[in-house]
Length: 292
Ligand code: SF4
Ligand code: SF4
Image 1 (cartoon, protein in one colour):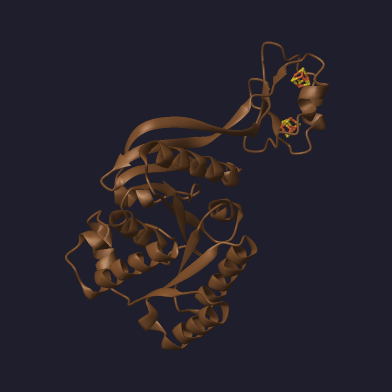
Image 2 (cartoon, rainbow, N blue to C red):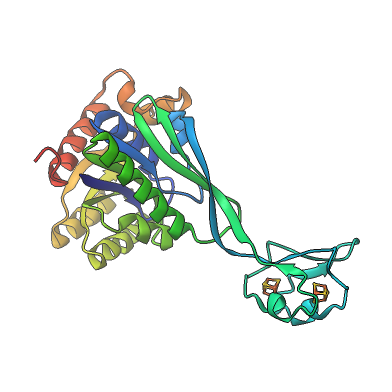
């Protein structure tokens, strides 16, 4: 089984649109949306949920009003200002609680519980292109890297159970914790970039990350025709580092038109753009060793 992750140094490069198209083109795959902070692959794939699970990570304090004597000790000990009067007594603000457990340890009335923190939901769904493993982290919830690892593990188990040869992941933008988790164990990362100075800078950062984690990298230059000079700089960078550029895609309103219709680009009537994208997928599959 191979694992391909589509990444980008920043959001808005076309990463998810192309992941959707590759999900359409790839055979025998499990699709995985690893952008757990702001998932949007579901908007293109319109999944039907078949399984739903809670994601817990860390712990948070919770005061039992039946046991609390209102001595105020916990509020004075909490370094994060998470325990406050709420009109009915002292209560923990879950957005501020860092789970340090100090209040639990010192409460003289043993009135503070310390349950696991419910940080989000994860799902296994069916889509018109095959199974999708995805999730939604609650706003402000932490540990997105752990959730990404969980999704990857679920996707791999599903792939094994169904005899799928590929896990195709839509990685989070940037170079943070969820991206690092996305790359772990991947056979190929495909970075989608745009020809702007910030696009080039972001590509260099994700390239350093893939190099650090020894994951092979291929590059798609999207909207290459908008700035030929920057495209040239990106090509030179890729040549220096030996990264194959698997597609130069022009700016094309087809991408937006497809999105508005809830379709991926390769489901639209064929154009040069969609032909280039199909060729890119053939090259990506070969680079990842699919079918070998
Ligand atoms: S330390 Fe315990 S008893 Fe005192 S206010 Fe806090 S929860 Fe209530
Ligand atoms: S667990 Fe720590 S951060 Fe949370 S309320 Fe208690 S003392 Fe404050």
